[in-house]
Length: 213
Image (cartoon, rainbow, N blue to C red; front, top):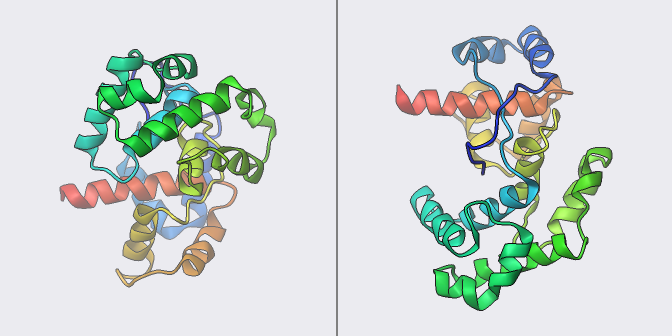
């Protein structure tokens, strides 16, 4: 969901969260040291992050990259609400964007241009208020809103229960590979508060390690 063009920095809560999680959770005590000197980073504007989420939804990484290049070719290397609006639905379709994704991108741009979303105020809003504002945009699901709060806003205590990777990692490490329900995942996560974002991030990393093993 993010690019690599802007400087990265460790969230100011990260070290405290890591220490607290390792003290509380025996699984994370083993997983966290396997990923030293890496942490959650945020590298894009809110508009670009959300546009990437729309473009990449329900397609392969290869397809998402190709569609993003098509969007960038039409709207600039780092698209803005204004550039998407100027190109318009027909221009996005001519660039190679599918009809539905093009419609979603136009709706996203209009929400920003018409100030129906308020990124300058999101830092002062609670999670559910941010989710409500974002999911009013076509093509933005609760999962997308939660990914935005994790990767762009760097909120420390987001638990994306609709994320299959998180459920898979909880199943693998806490339930010996047995299927896990949302209720069971939430129960496990109680020990992680108020650092559920950080725990989720390391569990995602653990899946990458398992695939490389």
